[in-house]
Image (cartoon, rainbow, N blue to C red; front, side):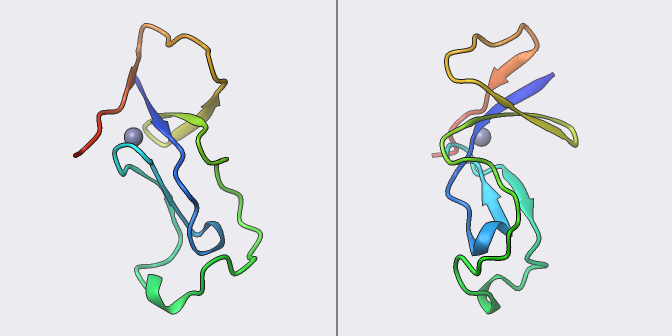
Length: 81
Ligand SMILES: [Zn+2]
């Protein structure tokens, strides 16, 4: 069972990225000390391309091409607001 998210704007050079729709956190390497880091510090950390559809199933995540229909076990995430 995979949930489809939308990659949001990466922050702090890719240390932090969440879903633009529901806020699901894709990655967070900030250790909770977000405010000590400058935006786009150029750390070379890989992150999802903004606006891409990202399937998440447990610890696994992968990119889904635009326009590709969902599999039976895939559902879109729901906006939180
Ligand atoms: Zn989401």
